[in-house]
Length: 546
Ligand code: NOJ
Picture 1 (tube, helix red, strand yellow):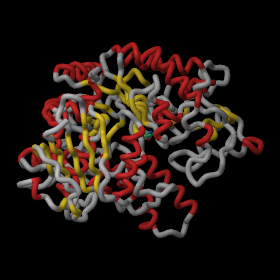
Picture 2 (cartoon, helix red, strand yellow):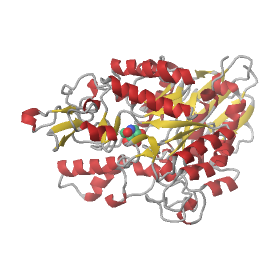
Picture 3 (cartoon, helix red, strand yellow):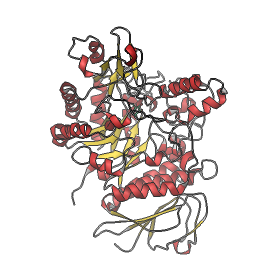
Picture 4 (cartoon, protein in one colour):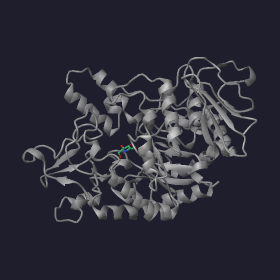
């Protein structure tokens, strides 16, 4: 059996701006991360994914890069970054950088130069004449943040493409120089000793044509840029020229892929892909509208991906999502139980588990009733669009719609203790702080043996000590529609049995598996007598057979 670091280790995503502030300016920084490495080590983390820390005007909080070779001064310096890589290495922790290459900031030197039609950078981006004598954008594509995907530039009387905010300008991957520039960036960071990359919106980088898209309520134009053949060719090149040579780990943010498409991205391209199907179960196709979540739909989606894709990413949270307990569990009545149930899912399915900062201590969503409290650029853009389309809609209703995709919820500062500002900083943070910090913080979790954090720690150790969880096959058993139940099996190792009630209903226990209870979110005296699965109950059992 070939052992792979990413198969045995857990990834922890850090949103640096909100992780820990070491210098008292209300903004998290690299030294702050260094000072918390022991915490991560203790948790059992083997890989850190850092959201962008590059030089940037921060229009989309760093997902708008102005230089791939410089660190934003808010976070520190390149020396700090090198120290972080070094200190992490000492603790056996590897680092993934966020690779944002679908677009650059409009403040990137390439874009500034590209405004001059005679510059070699002009063709690094999509500069085009508009329709209707240049009055309308070149095509009807939507920006992911709503509105047109094109912006008119007065200086040179042309439009440029931006699938995200107008300060995030799409690069032109038909240009060989762009591909070479990206390879240079990849090598620069890998030579610094990082382990690999989380690749931002990587299945959108290649625009096959700029023709009008079929009119849709959301993402008009996508058939011209999502999962294109040209995209695969470029990733194969990155893999052959760079990733393979460094044995790098890569995880693609591949919004909207089917399992078959994900498999294609894993064929000599990326190590693994993020699928978002399980995160869209409570949203309609226009994502400002919510829909009721049914636990059975989560079960079906998880099983589908586990059966079809050999190696998955297992996660519920990241910096773009609302916190998970309220979405898939019940934060009022079964807070601990449902948080631990979700931990059990990500740590026992087949794939690499990803924990997002704060998830391990059960952080919850924040509350927003005022647009001025929101930092997220996409929330502001959605607000403007709704206001334009429905000028008479009540402000409260508009904010409710905006809030469905307000990404500030997960970006609230990490709560370290019950002191002011949750121990994140000595001063007010750059973003609205969590009102729950006195109860929900790292210290209170550490002090309580029954806490969510201790459950994560325990389960991460269990995952490390039982190779069937990282390398074993997964076999699902049929059961109640709200119960997820499977074996993880590896030759010459005891089979691990996992049973999870995804719902708040009490459900008759379908299987009496014998063995040692490795983890559970209830106080279970004897599994032999377990006639019912309690709400959100999760059990991980080491069986007496293979
Ligand atoms: C996905 C990132 O996760 C998100 O935060 C960002 O806004 C978009 N990509 C654009 O870079």
